[in-house]
Image (cartoon, rainbow, N blue to C red; front, side, top):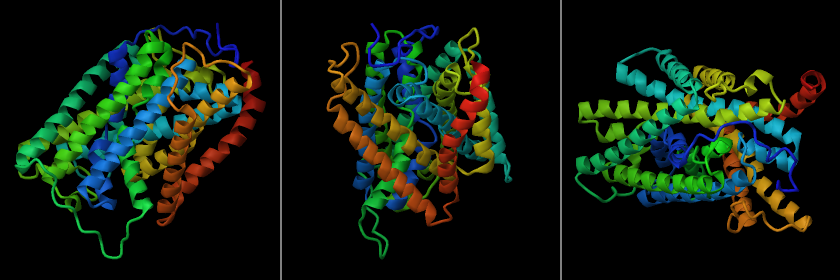
Length: 458
């Protein structure tokens, strides 16, 4: 029986075939996370932190928080196992306006901005690998990668999933190989000495939070498989295990990778470097080119994960009549072709007009709002059950200490959001201002949509 507290259509089958097994689910989570961040993030973390052990602590903390995120997501996904993940949770918790706000904002900032961030770095790697110069080389190559990955995913869910499985396996092996090679090249298995703290700089929370942001970016995607819940076999058992397994596997890989880099390069040499492995292997031209090739491959896999899983939010939004109907159609091979095309177009726009660092700030500022709302929805469901005197649903995964964990995650999102705004405002504040303005405009857009377009659909 459907859970009586939820809208009657929440557990209604959506007509999608359950194609994906546990391997594909883990591949989506790990593959979505291992992307551009793991090359750019170590240098960004070292920009604000100067001790190897503090740097490793940031990566461990980001992994621990990601595990908490997967636990909360596992409860929400098994409560509402429908395509679209977080969109479905917000719709059931808060109603149609919150679903509209989340779905449209997610499509622009998380699908478009997320894929765009990865593609921007792919363009940099590919341009260097191919020896292409000029202002437009990187954006053109980034947009080409988006188009290629979009075509593969538009071919069907099975094709996209198999491609994702292969790319994720290759990416994980590449990171392990880079880590082992770094220790061999360095000839040591202990981190380099800590960098001295710059004159006038004192220990504070903000540098740690700013360092946490790029580390978080490297874990982002670990929960993406929840958006495919409607297409997962044995979702009640497989999805929680796969979500937690993705977080634990990523933490182990990232700690090994960063530990090895710190054995080969001191933090002050890493600071601000776009690709730390390129510094490690600078004296080995052939290996350096192989690193660039691996970097590009890793970015391709991450773009694929975004367009495979995250566009399900856009699809679900359209299926409920909250965006254009064409975006809610599946091909006979179970691919939301129009939604994939829109996501790819938005990502290409970001790549063309913004740099990697700019897109990353925009992405994270929007995500603090959107995912903060998501974690709050767990609290809403728990309190709703208590108010109506119901036991916790027997077929739903229960997050240990669910409400305190959700409150902790909301606090983390708020701290990161405030740090981004403060950091951006010290420059020109333009990207933060535009991001917040767009989010605010969703309220107006919903009123317009409901009055003028929604009646046409009904």
